[in-house]
Length: 483
Image (cartoon, rainbow, N blue to C red; front, side, top):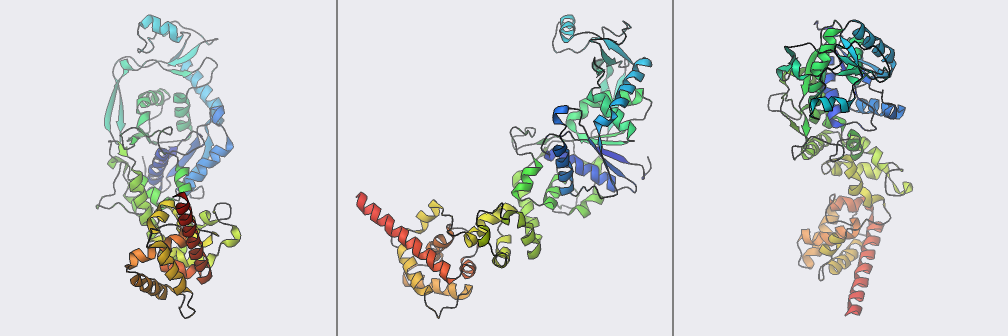
């Protein structure tokens, strides 16, 4: 193979979601294609299942790839092609294999095979191999597996893998109605598209000897094979869409950065060396070697991914961070009235939030108090901060101090004022500021308090302190009445 001839393919089935395992496979293929001058990443949509043949799902695949940096505009990208467009070639190839004696028709039912084998776990027994059946109703086309010897798959990750031909049944390549099975369609498509490297998940390894036999029967050299390690959850179970969070779109919606996701996915089975994990794609791409991928299962650790994402968020410029937050601040997504949003206020507070969020969606609970008419109150925070002897006393004193027109409404003077009030009540700053924070933001944990007070403005802060005092008074009255 010359360095300019490499053609890899990524062949997903439209399912309405893009699996993180598929994203990992796509990235490994993309890296390999881009390393070679003239390398091609071929996108082929496996759309022969009519129930899954929906244009919006195909569009979703293309959007997901673009989010990962695999763009249609890149000269290494080719497609999308659709498997359904090659249906005639699939049928033609099946007929050719039959004509050449490399396939034969079989009318055995599953029940008949099981009755002859007297074991439901044993495969087809070759009953129709020499019956000379011609095409007809109820007759499927089976590939004639060579007698004796092994089929050897040279896997770039797993090394030499041998499959005894005696353990490979004469498998069906076309149904009785002439429609091809995936095993044949996949090979025909790869041959037609000149694919010479196949990088895919470990679950396809058991199909590989059948596909290799078909490549050879059609007179073509099989591609280079590489089967990626399975991705597992914390219980070492294969990731399942029914049990695990596997949709790439869900991570997008939560606010993971594509560059962080790409970085993390590239490390599921491979390492760039140098004891480095945080590494941009531009540095990882030239280092990637498919032969260095580990064959052991790869653990998808969402906590580690989240930590990666936090690192990438903190590396953004303040301006870029603010822009990345836009989708969560838009009128159709944000919990506050559109007219309440002030972009200048957000940009002022954004650098303080940037160091505290690990996914972009966390920006909303960090800044919502600035744009809501009233803060979202956390009951546990309220109960902790507004204890008798502290809450009402601190709020009353702070309200009086904040009313002083001589107090400059800036973070440092406000901090000094709260500290002064707290000292008068025998409270250290940490205890003193808690009731003020909860009254103003609704929570005990959040962005720096005094910068928040400055941005909220004197009038809104005073109004919220007064409302909190009124609530405390009402609670005391209700408690007294109950006694």
